[in-house]
Image (cartoon, rainbow, N blue to C red; front, side):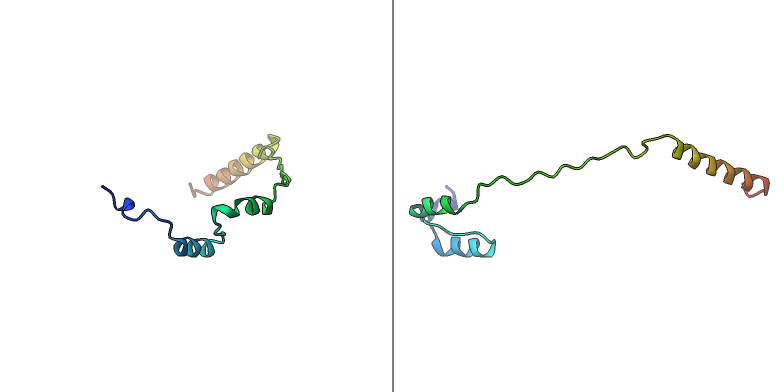
Length: 81
């Protein structure tokens, strides 16, 4: 036995409140045809974004590694390492 089966009739007021608070619409079964006619079935455009590689070429990586090597060499020469 479940409390869900205690009252199985439709609670129209509750359904209307839920529909209005969630931006929906409450319809009776007889209004189904009107609801289907009000829907917009036009296809929406699809946005395609190209995501290229972050390191399209290797030279920026080697420049960065070179800067770190120079910085390390300078700190080592000054006794900071």
